[in-house]
Image 1: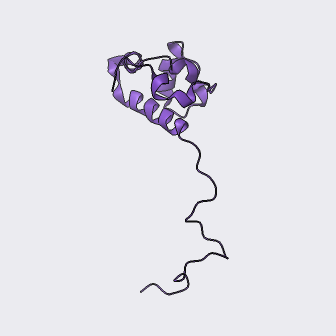
Image 2: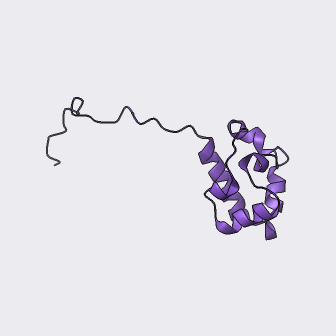
Image 3: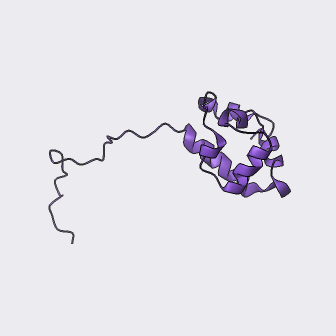
Length: 102
């Protein structure tokens, strides 16, 4: 991983995200460190490099960093569609659906 690469390069699909840091589901302490550092939106957060993000937290608190990266990863994934191939409907039940488990 390139430590100096901007987070926007890792998460390009979030470049236009106007979600505020308060709406980001992260620990309150991590959120407060970001806000005190002038980071108020996900778009601003993406302008940081990995090294810059870690440097925002006292003692280089890696759990805060990991939590933020995990949350960005979740935001970057496309939502799952409601209909998946393993969804059963009355019209489409597997052959062994009514058999008793042995």
